Length: 166
Ligand code: 4NP
Image 1 (cartoon, helix red, strand yellow):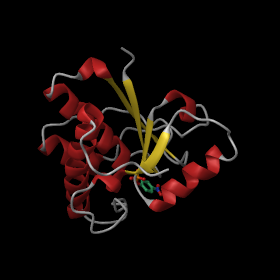
Image 2 (spheres, rainbow, N blue to C red):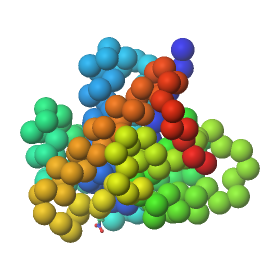
Image 3 (cartoon, rainbow, N blue to C red):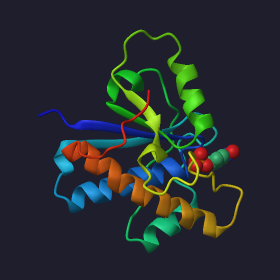
């Protein structure tokens, strides 16, 4: 069977979306489902093209037993055809994704907000931790951890009650 392809998207592709990518990869491996998924991340900007994730995000991930090794790259139109799911980290990123998609008639990807899956959605956005302190990175980790649990449940069983928006 074709693997399910998931792309996480934030602004810089060095904090939130690589963390989401690393988390879901980790969860999928723990569930022994590795071959059934292809998971990646991208940024709406090209600010950090080719960079490793932010050191603070890597250190937070490492504390939780996850190594982040992806390199930043910018979202491109082809991604709408290559991926089944495109998860936006916040509403501004979601708008940029829709702008890039433009009038493209039929696309494969379902585009939605990551926190549509958060069981404790105190905001629709995964907060951008880049200009803040270390606690912001830990908060991003916690939001993405619980959102990905629900997202993976949806992907593997279809039992999650929150449908991805368009
Ligand atoms: P991210 O965080 O979108 O979660 O990767 C940011 C990283 C870099 C910048 C903004 C947000 N920046 O402006 O360089």
